[in-house]
Image (cartoon, rainbow, N blue to C red; front, side, top):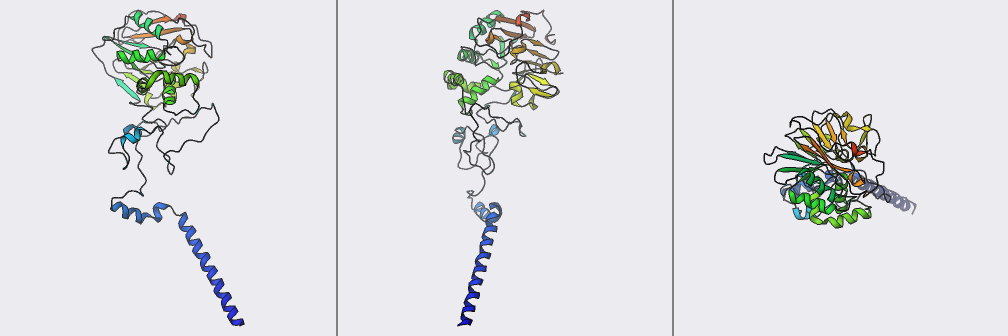
Length: 378
């Protein structure tokens, strides 16, 4: 009986050891990457034409086509997406971690090889980020107007003062067509009707993002503006690029600014739509802080910009700022090329009080002496 008991005990211990060994093998297999442990299965199914186990290839949203789409996904289904491609190993509908109410979400400014910033999908930018306009002999003049901000009546008064003709004049706006003022929809519809151009301002960009549901906390005035503009106007705002280059005058049009000693295309969308000043080499987006970035811009291209209403009209060797705070009770200013003439009209009233008091814009000259087309305003 004792021998039988010892034999049974040995068998029991042996079984326990075999079970533990088997469990350790299973754990080690579960820690191996799926692509390695099931590589043979992926290869077998790939040979059969079944790609269910393959990771879908997410293409750049700016260069999307039917041939580049993964299987079982069409252009119509892609167009319904309003978020960027999923992270590696994440779900397609994964959302960023929620933040407390009122906090702005930070947008990465790094660009990929195609120049398309990862956080900005094709719904935010329905065109190229930087557009070059060649010389068009049908236009005698190029009229560049600062931030309108929905001041439609002042906008029409300025065009009347310039004797604007849609057939002979090319109209360009420096962004921020909408927001703050009372008639944003009328401004957008007018520019669309006459075939005008514009770059994207920070207020235009905010409205486009809100319309796509990319802002968690939307302010009441922004939501009201989205509802008022309508689908077609919002889609047109989504076509606005970050910069326009006038080859005839070797001039860039941007909304806010660019870092000195850099190419416009290498600046992030955040800088092109929000830059105001510099602390040394560090950019700042706050009103009136730091030194003007335009003061340190050394060309060789001329930049015409808006956005910085706090400093009002700015004029440097290679940069001209024409946002003179019309919506804050200042003036609406225009620069006409090739004559290099300045025109402006006084705002009818203060539609919104500025956060920082504006520099007196009465020093903006209504007109300058005629210059040759190759000469820049000085």
